[in-house]
Each structure stands twice: as C-alpha cells, then as structure tokens.
Amino acid sequence: STRFTKYSNRGQRIKDKFWYVRLSPNHKMFHYGDCDEKFVPTLEDLPNKLAVVDIKALLTGKECPHMKDGRNRKTPHQLAFSLTLDSVDVTSLDFVAPEEEVYNYWTDGINALLG
Image (cartoon, rainbow, N blue to C red):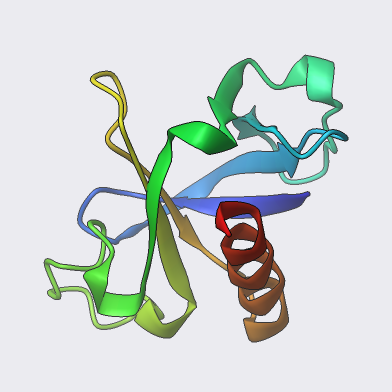
C-alpha cells in the first residue's frame, strides 16, 4: 500500500492532495481513495475498488494518459504508470510514484498479478 500525490489529467501535481492505494489480502482487488498527508487508511476506509481482472494493461512513462500532454516538464514521467481499465466510469488509474523503489515495487507487482 502506498500514498500517492494527486496529479491532474495533464500531469500537473495538485498541491496537498493525496490518494491511497492498497491491494486486498487475497490479491484480487485494489482499494483506493483520497487521504491526507498523515493518515494511513484501512481497507474499510477506502471507498473505491478495482478488480484485478478488470485491468486491461499497465502503461508506463510517456505512454500514460496523464503524461501524454508533455507540457509539464517538472512531472517525473519516468516514475509514472497507469492501469487502463475495461470500464465506462473510469478509463484509467494514473500514478506517479514518489521514488524509483516504489515505482519498481508497484510495476513489478502489477505485472506479476496480470501474469
């Protein structure tokens, strides 16, 4: 589980806004939702769910929807990744990892889940 800084659809960081994502113990569902900088939410605190089977693909770097604009040079696109979904409501979940180690944990883990 990790707290991520929120970014706009254009890849711009949203000041003092965070969201939290964690994998369920059975590895079948991601739970996510908004949080503040200090709070570590439980699964029950996170209102949104994404089934692993609903993930179409893992995109990284400049392939991510929130990095395609390319206008914001400050956003570290090498730490960006997105989950594209088979959903009408949400087409992707877009992440920017706080550091390379977190990026590697998440992308390696998601690749393992997707097989």
